[in-house]
Image (cartoon, rainbow, N blue to C red; front, top):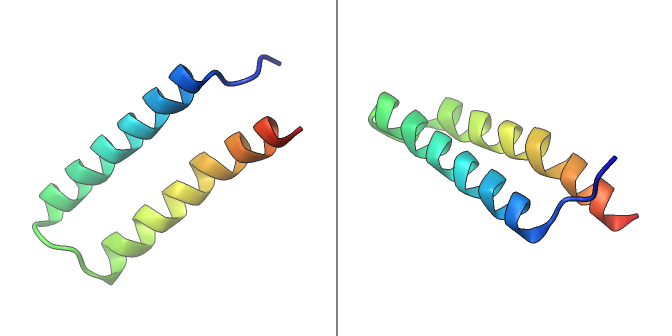
Length: 55
């Protein structure tokens, strides 16, 4: 498997931030449900990237 370059990581982070923005905009507010979804998606996306780059 290829290692993530800083450019790829930056693209993933920007896409995740944009999707979080769309989620907040769609709900109109930040409540507990939206907050938990953002935290869960961040864990799902960033933990494998961290583990792969740590090796």
